Image (cartoon, rainbow, N blue to C red):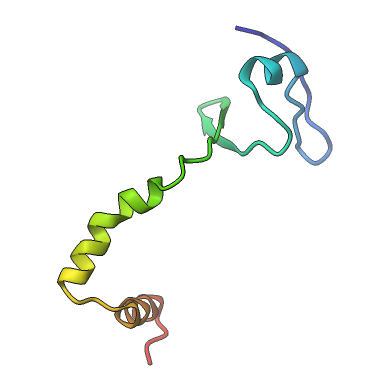
Length: 87
């Protein structure tokens, strides 16, 4: 485990020290999940999902929608109703 000290900029930005970026494989543009845990700030790399993962996870939902004959218009109408913009 590598330890380092950093400071915030006037905009609240932090620089992750080079040694830690290298150790964790953090590259420029890397998406990071940031959350507070008590008096700690936790950063976690967000990895891109493997290709096709979303489709695989969504397929049972799509199958159920087809089975019940739910159309795209049905979904759009339901969203508008929930948002309070019903026709």
